[in-house]
Image (cartoon, chains in turn brown, purple):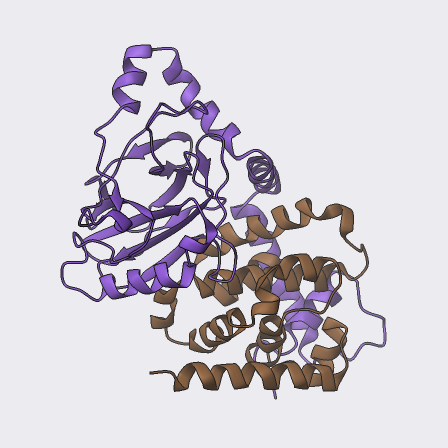
Length: 145
Length: 263
């Protein structure tokens, strides 16, 4: 499941395998603060975050067809300073999930707002608000010369 | 909204037995579950669980104690002092102290692999080529590399508390290696060589990959976004392979350039 998620986002087998290892390393590092329930959701979100971090740091990925949306999400979510401090820390301590992950689930994976809300433990209006902020950041970024 | 991915997580959960019986699965759930089972088996065949677990433990251990891995790599060399000296004490490059107007002719400097710093030794950027089953190979300025190879970056802080590692390639791309994002503080770990947590796989960008370590003693002297911007400016120039990184202020810059060849 984790490898499939990484493959889908990174579109590179080598990088996906590398990211998969990192997902479990992060889980090991934070094992004392993990909640054992909802294991697959947690894995999915950690994998999404790690892949977003990688996409964010690789401008070259923008050249790959079909990956543009994920790149834009990755870059826009990096602009959200309050989240960039410790995305995984917050994720794993059950604090609100990153807007980047929410955007990937909705815009890339195609989950409905209700499904996303259920998945990340927010209200539908909370998810909508996060997406709106991310879209605003995207527009600001694209308006920059 | 419906995409091929839209029910993927739901089906994954069903496969793991995490869904209630009355869950609203897609019409093709049975087929997708079969596909996932087949894919799981293919993954396990290709990446055996024991091997993956071993790699995860290795990385976890490396994260807890980054210097341990490099100490182990260097142990065999330590048994042959002459070889050690020849390998570890390489050509010493110049320091581009941008604040002192030295012109920015940055080059690589090779130091010693020990927690004890020699008097006058400065920060250092080191590149290693990782290959399965063999010890990493230390690369020097001008080494030949190939697409898909995985490089391990490491630095020696040498008393500097803050540092940024970026790279530019022959296609004009810029990559930030440390910190992980421009919003993170560029803190360096002291106490000997510090490998970055993850390797860096080369793509097919032509001609070269050039890596920079920009260090400073004080946090106010080093803004990650400015370093990235300087790298972008450099990357857009035709002489990016050799031109200095245009930074001002009390920072020191090291660079290592490796040459790209087709496989």
